[in-house]
Length: 183
Image 1: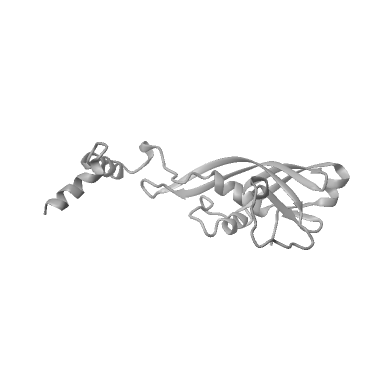
Image 2: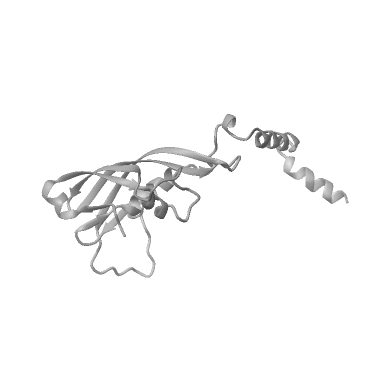
């Protein structure tokens, strides 16, 4: 069930609406269910662990949403696999247009960059859940790592040893192939 929604008639009547939404542990757990990310620590499902602050305004029939998501997420360190807490403050801007009543797509459809940056709303509500989730996922590093001082020293030593034994040079990758061709 969407929990982050704005009412289009309110935005139309006021011209600009500012809002704050609390991100609960339950919302984040659901939004991040198919990822390695989670909420750090333990707590109740209704515990507030982050927030979304935004402003929305009308631009003709479209809605322009600008905001910031602030939350801490836990992810496994790519180096030592121990939990790593990421404090995120993610700005986002999104354009939302009314969903066409009838959508007929041509056989071949070529999307422009503007098409890819546009969200759609139906009826009197603009649901922000997917926008906020996407903003968070795009901000998380692909390979989050601790500072070396915070990782397990044994892991750091093993990685340094492996790096020292790796052949160096522009053609180092072919060195093993040369030895295999001789036999």
